[in-house]
Amino acid sequence: MRGTLMLATGVALVPLILVIYYLLYKGLSSWSGSFFSTDPTGNFFGNPGGIRSAIFGTLEIVALASLLAIPIGIAVALYLTEYGKEGWFANLVRYFVDVMTGVPSVVFGLFIYIVLVISHAGGSGFAGWKGALALALLMLPIVIRSSEVVLLLVPGSLREAALALGAPRWRIVWRVVLPTARSGLVTGSLLAVARGMGETAPLLFTVSLATAATANLNGLMNSLPLQIYTDITSPRDVIVARAWGAALTLVALVLILNVIARLISRRSSMA
Amino acid sequence: MIPPETTSKEPKEMSAAEERSQQAEAAPDLAAMGEQRKGHGVKVRDLHAYYGAVHAVRGVDIDFPANEVTAIIGPSGCGKSTMVRCINRMHEEIPGARSEGSVTLDELDVYGAGVDVTAVRRMIGMVFQKPNPFPTMSIFDNVAAGLRLSGTKSDNLRERVHRALRAVGLWGEVKNRLNSPGIGLSGGQQQRLCIARAVAVEPEVILMDEPASALDPIATLKVEELIDELKSRYTIVIVTHNMQQAARVAKSTVFMLDGEVVEHDETTKLFTRPADERTERYVTGKFG
Image (tube, rainbow over all chains, first blue to last red; front, side):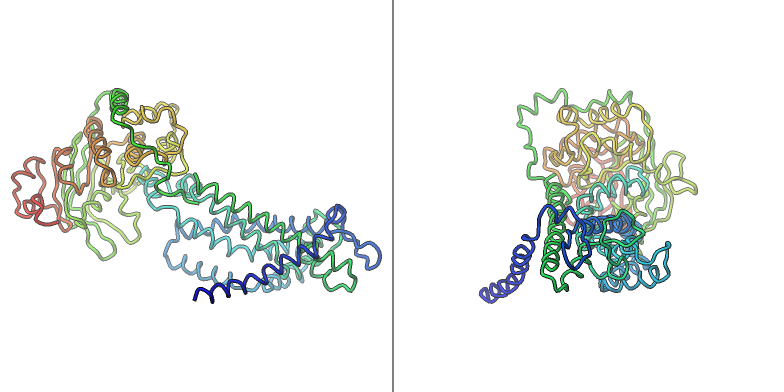
């Protein structure tokens, strides 16, 4: 039994290690100062340029998506745990959230494409903010579910103590429930951000691809997943190498977020 | 994420010598709370309480006289906690729970139309079975929490917090670490902190739901002494499993069984010459 389980663990580890090995082997060689500081030129011949605009684009789109998904997600979770509880409406919401968690990410992209891109909402077709919306839709159920679990961990005795002191419910939420759950909420949200960062499909139909770095969220933008997506099919080795470098960058960003999430949750568990 | 209920770095109980040296300071200082004041009595009339279809309290009438400690005893599930939670309207916070009948604090109908439930709870404070200080707050903030959470404007917050800590005899033990976390205290200290939190709001009545059942004997003794001190300013209702405790702290005692009051009398009489046969069997340990 033990041997079988060890074997299964070994089999599972092989692809993980291979992924990391290939990422480092193929990606590290393309990392350089100019790789991070120049935009892709878009030229097939000559210097292909770096991935600066892709990093900026990903950070901007994900930041906007987080700004939308995290407050709304935590608010929904608060509604479920503090007000809706086991009522029929709260359970209906939970059911829809579960369904949303299982929706493939490409569907969110298609949805935004049909509703906002084709209709040229906001004066442009493809736009960064539309990609951010698609990502936010993807992140929302993750934030709601993880936040609900964390909020349920806040002992009922604390709410009871606050109620018995004559506190109105909204103030209990602000001053007792949220501070007690804070680190768990941060961890759950950061994991949702990490998940959103690596998604390609929702951006494919919503943001399209650009070469220059831009702060204009109403226009075409570059992003790491799409940069990888287009580069990897190129017949030119230098451009394929850039895809590996971009992939390694993306993994590094996600890793940094995960480490931050862990540090936050560890620090608070010692308090 | 959520701090564990007991921390590994729980402070050691003080040695007996330290204890004695701090006695002068640690003794509850009710003079600091002002003169003895006339408390307010509570009248419960024909009170029924339900959890969904379960009829937990079945027509209870009790008078809780001002400035006295009244103990409620009875076997588990007899409805004593539920009855007490109806007095400050905490019972209705449980989904599916409801109550009928009347509770009056002096002339105020606690369940009257237009009565603000948060105001009721500020007048009728509560201490729970397990100490439940707020884990994210310091000792100071825990005591101030009642005032801050209820939105009470107070210019002399610091003074009121210090006064409440003195009143529960915790001042000497915590005055040098008011900013350290409340959950760093020992269990008995945490419970006195929770009593200070209730006292800081300056209620008329304090309900205690088995306040010492999670504490060791020494901490229990301290809480009992504190109850005895507090009755000069507050009307106190204490639910307890422990008959010796009722005998030690309460002037009168109520024996409840199956949601009804069986007997309510002077504590000494109830324990030595009970009128009802069921009371006698309970206090002599034949059941329950």
